[in-house]
Picture 1 (cartoon, helix red, strand yellow):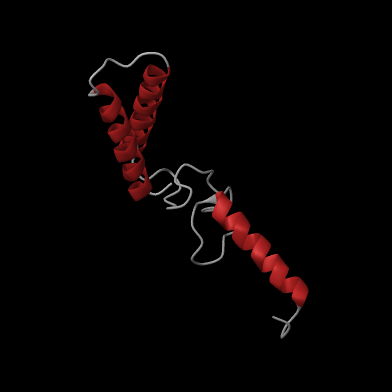
Picture 2 (tube, rainbow, N blue to C red):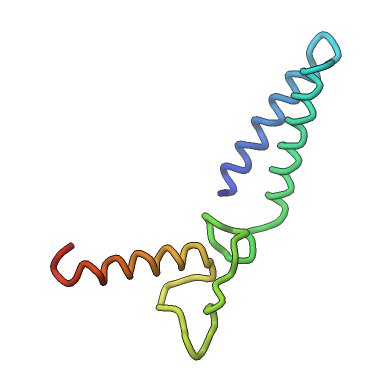
Length: 106
């Protein structure tokens, strides 16, 4: 998840919690459960913002797995590929799909 979407999630959760908490009557029953859920979502979003960009450096999968071939001197990744195993796997599958079609058949 991108940082902008984390901020939007945080803001939405805080708005929900604020609406419930500052209502005329104290929250009870289902309203109290919604308040607790909103506060948990707000906390999770705030924590993800404080964790930094993640180990992969990937905008799409910041907390994804690191490709085991990253920095492998014997079997290096192609130029321009990053640490993210999920993105690199997608690139590998796309490359294999193009190879099966053959030249000039795209």
